Length: 249
Image 1 (cartoon, rainbow, N blue to C red):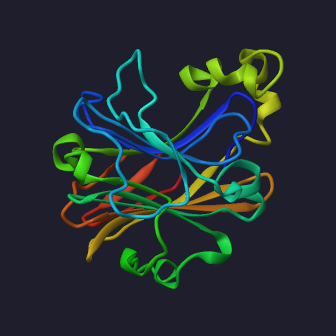
Image 2: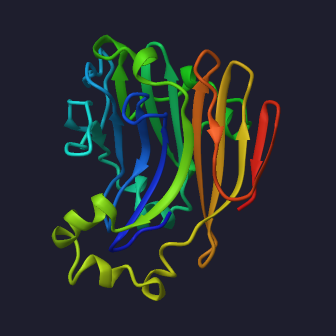
């Protein structure tokens, strides 16, 4: 996973006419942030509620409505340092999964040695997993009207509207200076080995990401139920077919 001063890695999905079709941030952090953030961005009428589910993450904000002038969204900060940056890479990564259906949106993180057998067998079954790290219940947000027609995005931004204003609290100098490519080369690399899409009881995406300079592996996974909109994959060079897509970047 890319990390370091000025680096803003993210794994997210978004629909057209932002924020009318919603945005789901599954992996997001900046600089040398300690843990991962999970966030939703929506049009008006959506707030964060976990319903009756117990989670281990800390709530960062409950107002999901976002605009160019107010873009914090509603989300959580994980309490597990294995979810982001250098500690994530030191353990050879792990798995992130998210479930999106009419009942809400849920996200899980599994460290490398704690990945469920059904995920390793490529037969993911969220009903068998431990409690999620983030939950947005449909009791406070109409999921079907606020989230639709999403594309899945894996990207790394330097500085930007998240990295620049937060730079001074985490790093020294200026963000522009820290964004010098030569200084970031060892920390901001990633290559996506493959993406697998499931079409049985669930639809899902598995991303195998390798940090080239240290041969550390990060596997990121998104799981979407069959009644949810199908993701459109967008990145690098890709080949796709009915029910399955494979990326080689």
